[in-house]
Image (cartoon, rainbow, N blue to C red):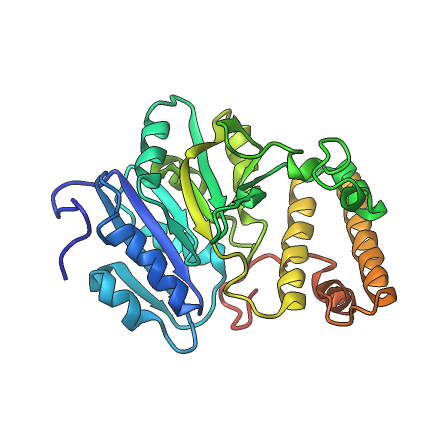
Length: 325
């Protein structure tokens, strides 16, 4: 299998694209074509893919597109963040770019990210714009940081009543439509690039996060170093949200577990305690609302019934435990 793009054994590429797969093979193939096919980036790049114990394994599919030494089959699902760390250990590029396996980089997207990063002396984390399959902008490419106030708005339902209001739904970043370059608190791991030297200095994603929340935590640590976090609308990816998860309650549990971990790790103890209680209250309110509307299949009802699984967040990761999560 030839090396991807202009990668050669003697030169380090501009960017290492790291893709972590988990099921959804039909979408993974689209993703791989976008970074290895005719519309692949023109900047020198390598693609590293890790299969997180998909059933059936996606390693044969990945090896159709990539050299064998750029494909890693992980024997058990170790989570998104830890698998990204494993992939980045193999990276040689000046930048590490994380791309979701259910995302398709549009032509020129990765080139635009490298140009933008090269032009910023304080380059920290760079993201782009995500769209759905019909081309509609999905605002979830970036977020505002969780605060006690944002958790209060969630707990009281204000963030739902005044959706995308800058004051009452602050994590949404208001009505900004992601069509302009802007500094943001959090770039999501769906389409995220940062200098490899910075990734290595920070140790990558905090391994305590199995899935969700690791991108927010990393962005906070980057911000504390005085580095820039921003998005460029010139980099566009089509993203099939939630393609790797068919159970809405299970996904909601992981989202809440990640958020609880972020609040615990990144707030003062008193603030974290208040924010976590408010988060639980908001989930209870939404579960009650779903029951009253007869929405028995709501992820909120399932998440509330499983609150013992996420109320304390993720435990400190211990890789020696066979059930570590």
